[in-house]
Length: 475
Image 1 (cartoon, helix red, strand yellow):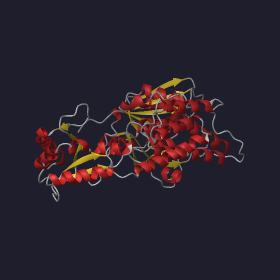
Image 2: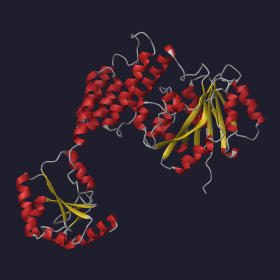
Image 3: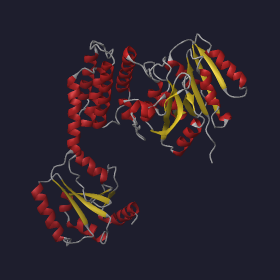
Image 4: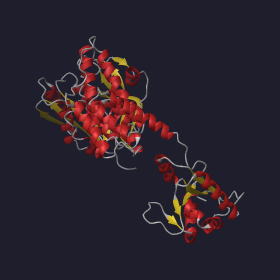
């Protein structure tokens, strides 16, 4: 079995003398080899005894890797950045200074990461406790999200719409640090940023078990905030989401996902308005120049041909809305792009009913030389896994059907079930042509075709095509 990875517990603390000791002790109590777990504490300019508590624990546990770095107060994001920079572990695990890890947390995080190489970040459920460790809720998932379970695997779009990854449950591969570190100064939530950044390039997974304790004590930055505090946090949510849409690559988003992301952002805005009684509140600090900046984004995309398909248009509209969220025209265009994408997705598959291996031939070339079809039939007689697709989409439909039927009759293939032919007749939308070419595995022509990404075969090389088809289908 491969050696276990080293783990760094990252603790950012500011005036948490009451809780930081309990947090560090919970990291020391992990059922994980102690020599493989370091604890990095960043004291972000505390004015209480936070640093003294950490120093005392370091002395009591001489030989354990507990390091304390003190810096002038710079805020949570800067403190987490410093912790990431100081850490030496192969796995980085966030531990808020007022939270607690349960003993199996590190081991189970590592087991999940080792079992799933495609996963870049794992998290878990948490129990919710009060200031004195009294149990308030057995499950953060059940309390905060009414039992809803986060998505597994690809989660980038879902995270742009809503954060469901809580800091002290996170463990992330340090090898992905180039994707998330340093955290930009504009980012107020390191946990949401880590999850979103990693989700762009890797899968996420979670443990249903509560592996940590999330503490509600009345001074939390986010959890349990009400009134003006809730408005402040929802404005921070919106600022985070809009910043990500303006700065992160969005090419992986479908139109459906783009619409869902914006719906999530609008829900944040509704929650912000619901947090206070007055409708006269500002939800975003996007200035007077936002309308012009958003217009420039759309104009530049139009000039570059970036709105040629609904997927691209949806992503551009999402960026424009992130710049000027009050523009109803961009919102309407986002919805329209999604509608058109759904209509295109409903177009019939040109190669529906094809067998497992598809070779494509141009109808005009096939019709100009009966020998092309007879050679194919001779080579692939008794085949059950190969389809010859005939691209007649550029010919007049009725004429193509008649001429192809005559060709099949001349070649004696009427009623032959072993020779499977599919004729693509009638004009194709670009999306349908893309689908067709994505299905095709090889090209067939009188002479070899240069410049194609697909292998090309002629009557003389049909035996090689036969071998390729047999290898691909296991025949």
